[in-house]
Length: 302
Image 1 (cartoon, rainbow, N blue to C red):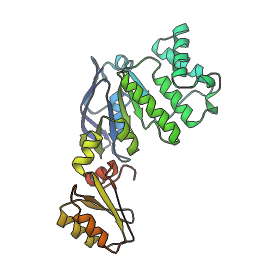
Image 2 (cartoon, helix red, strand yellow; image 1 turned 90 degrees about the horizontal axis):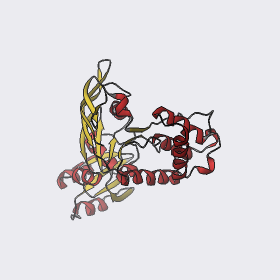
Image 3 (spheres, helix red, strand yellow; image 1 turned 90 degrees about the vertical axis):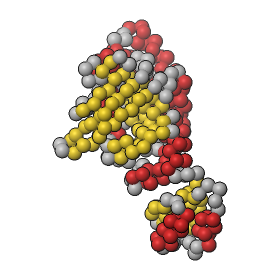
Image 4 (cartoon, rainbow, N blue to C red; image 1 turned 45 degrees about the vertical axis):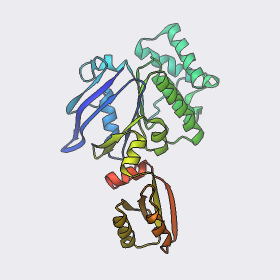
């Protein structure tokens, strides 16, 4: 099932928080929306599944227009928001069974589907416990299970692993990758570079409500930054600027020092940096933080 968004605009008062965003999401694809706080990710996310009404533009999911046929379109979607919003009065299993009623799945089919999802998410041992005893990672698994109760074709994940420990994040990643293999289309917002780079086939980079670039993670990094960067501290900005300009590369302040892109197969700049009387010098692979820093002047997490 394909999702198409064309020329989405959203205003709050006189301020345009989303400006002309268009995208296409195919079955079996994971598309990431990346941007710093205030970039318009959550508003765009809301417009795509019908929780936020755009001032201009349209969203189509399969044959359905989200603004005009929202009920039919949302039956094709599973949504995981940043809030768990689980019902504390129900057990883990009951949360799934009663949520299934929203999609007219009742009786034995609802109960069977709940048990299936608990098994898939390794939650069977917690089936008859209240949700308030679950850890953060287990709650996120339950929220994902709930979003899958009606076998949606498209899954929306709004910063799904925020606050999770590394093991819980890895488990969540494995399940998302499995959904892709099953043919689901996945839309993901995240602040985590490793999450975006590991999971996403394509990325849309948002800044102040505008798509500033898009492509695969590796394509964006290679095209905008290159393979490697150097980080250096304890040197005057004018010195770094002079070296970077002579080498024809990008540089920016970063933390207590500077980041400089290193030309591929060209060691002259690195050797020049090594000769400086710096307090710290290192080199590393370029990443998505570098991409955002070059495109917008801000990292993914400010």
